[in-house]
Image (cartoon, rainbow, N blue to C red; front, side, top):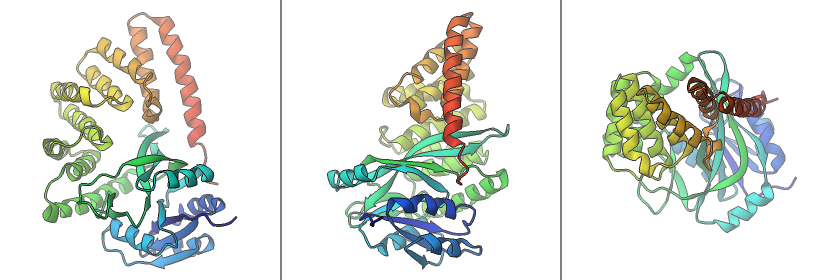
Length: 358
């Protein structure tokens, strides 16, 4: 297949468990593939050489953006698609991609990523997110050492690039980690994030990411502290990460036995956060505050919103709550209707994450 005028850029370190599945799935689409190795001690570089057009070496400097920008600078084409080693491309409409590249020359392109997650009960599920990953390197670059963001060359650090949705399907396996590896990952992220506070000072996005890692580690007090500081910066409530910050703070409040604070928070921001995920979390907080009827209304609403598919596996939990509540209120026929929806959703999600990368 002839090369598309797009370079897939990947940074890697000790990724022999994923990199072959990643590259093998990209190769048939005709992208140029550039891999930058940041110091692997395993077979990552050897495997990458079988598939990539170029394999580069870059000494690790505790800065993901620096490595990504280095990789992009050595690509043959200005249009860059950034992929991680633990992300497997399931489908790509290359004709549509080329059309959108011409249609939106000044915008970034966002991937809808389904992330596989493991639960303490041993079950596997998935969550969805939309992340900017496609860009013209002449207009954009990555910034921040961790949780890196695409920003325009001409704008400041807080500039948020508008995005269009890419016609590409990707499954991410990087969250399906044993507890010890996830803890190590979050501790590394926190080390880099706290280091960023010194030169940059606090901003909403940085506080949000600190809060996220602290919450994963079970440090509720620190998570609350930074989530609150992030919201105090007055961020734009239309941005997805702000919704996640509010939801994270509500969860931290509940973990700290501050259920009423969680409910007040969700109700405060409700007029600005009209997404299925927000409505679902609002319903959860209502349950925590022993308001099941109001929670039922929210759960049902979440299943009927335009972006319901972005709930991922949380849609299953939504249906479970609806079934339980309808039965509690004696509405068995309605519970049966949603039980059917639950089974259809569960079957679809199991099919969506059943691939093992082979």
